[in-house]
Length: 389
Image 1 (cartoon, rainbow, N blue to C red):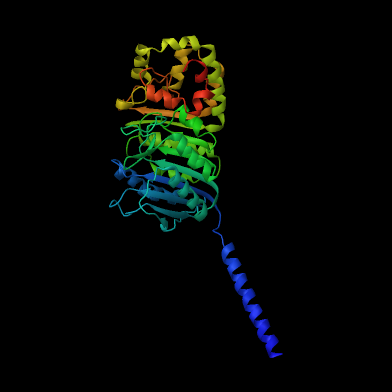
Image 2: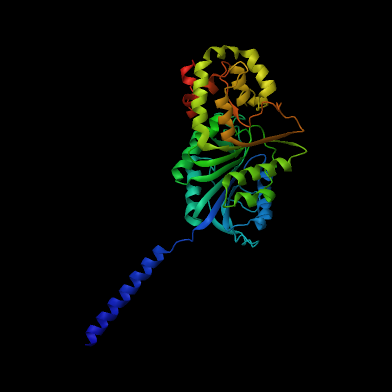
């Protein structure tokens, strides 16, 4: 009898041990209503301005009216700020004014924070440690829109001690994460372009972007965070966030657009039709005409001259000042909000034509840009491949 008791006791202990192990494996982080990731790459000449966004977010968190998690990834290089290595940290809010203390989730060894692999890894970490029903994403760094990465000022997106990432590679990292975002906000220059928005169309519902430069101090998160973590009516919250941006720069300079990505394919289809119908008019875009466009409708400056122009201005010129109504209607469906402040006149903004979204016009003077342009989804979707480019 004693032997049987010992055996039963042993079996019970083993069973309890196995159950405990099983329970430990099944322990999961509670799923919050919404997680927003702010991905800041500040190992560059505007690092101090980018770093100040952390305090701006902290200031705005107490005004959030719904529970959620705000996560920040910061890479400012070694020896800068309070984070000597890339760090992922979070704040929990209850939606009633209470903000939890900053909690460090993970630190990383020095790494290229604009490589596709690292971006994907951080996204996976966010999904694991801060799972949510909905996700928002903010990117803060240097950028030059659709342009290919090179070793001069052209960055496409990001600047981590000189490292940059092309937009298709960035989109690849986002796609592989498996997360679909309510929105992506780019606190970065020159990102509101048809080429960029078309690449991003399947990874987020809305985009907040600037067609021209964003001043280095960036977006006013102390005013915007309540919209970025809000749960209801994503479109209206993105519009309200963009309006806060414009109001913040009302005495200075700003361009902004909120883009609904579900409508990008429709814009590509209509553009394809227009390019086919008016392909003979493309000869108008000789060196003199493109120089004129750069002066009056160009969004890029200096070394970024000739990289992007107002999309609506291009279509107006192409169609002999007769923009088709279906394109106008489609633009209204895509760009659900647009505005600008032009007190500094960094580039020329035409109030009658401003569409909030830019585009490239192929130019024989820029063979490398043209070659890269052909690799983008917009090139074929919009019909450029069928009109001699």
